[in-house]
Image (cartoon, rainbow, N blue to C red; front, side, top):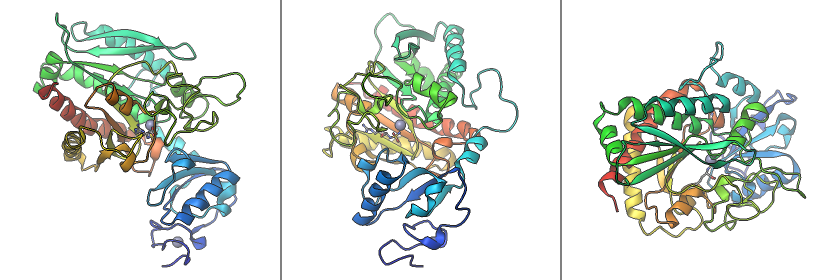
Length: 406
Ligand code: 0X9
Ligand code: ZN
Ligand code: ZN
């Protein structure tokens, strides 16, 4: 049915609806929050959404800020339900965010110890890092590479068979964005799998024999801790600066790669604030890699700071498609692959582009499950299947790199 001449048609399931008053159903007066998906298909829709963001408080889940809005990309936003009547949109992804936050943890008591199928607090991850790194000295070691703004040590785990010569390496990091909890869960899963399948899985054995994998389990520790204790939807770091009451910068806009040009904000209060100077965030000191984010089911590679194709575009695409196919083979989860700017949105200052421009040819950003049903609030019951399928893709890339060392 047609909702309005000006707006996209509304189907029965409200899947393609942009403005459709009859879809905005009670309860209007809930004081809780809702997440909406908007499907702008005309420039006017984009304007409407941007105006909306100016007049009420809107938390952009995807894309990350109103500056990144364009037609034909899905927009997921979180707003207080008191603004419902101002919303020109329809599909209610999560009926009631508060319920979704609660539903995310499986029922039953929270274990006191670390669990690979739970979203662990930073304290639990920290003790896990200590115990896992002393569990198998032949395969794993740890190194402190710095401290976060709030003074937490950043540990990198080095996985690989000890060798007298320097081995080629892969860098894997998780948790650049605080609220993307499935990402953080994946790095822990990867370490577990590496340690437990070395010696039995031929691919893992050969990988760790020939290469080292450096794993940074939580990049943005301060932010991650904050999402557990204060604000589940926090994205940025927690750095402060006198003169601004707004806290943090987006670590994935802070790398020195087209810094603060496209798709990044110079407003300290924005969720995509690029920082006062490139690499002002102390967290941005590591080199090289695969970086894990959520959500959208994408496998991205450079560039995001320009629409120009990377010199290695066709090879990067071929490997990404192979990795996506490997991922899909387990549970049928579909990923889209392509260069960041064209596939998700242009956004400068990301770690993948930065690593690539430093000469790291195979530089990939994963956006894990899902496509928006739960978004950042992916239920714990999906940790295991998500990590299992993602392992296949990461191992595919690692095996390719191993065979094509440059
Ligand atoms: O916007 C981002 O930083 C990433 N998406 S997220 O929803 N996890 O925030 C995408 C990063 C793609 N790469 C670059 N922009 N360089
Ligand atoms: Zn409708
Ligand atoms: Zn992210």
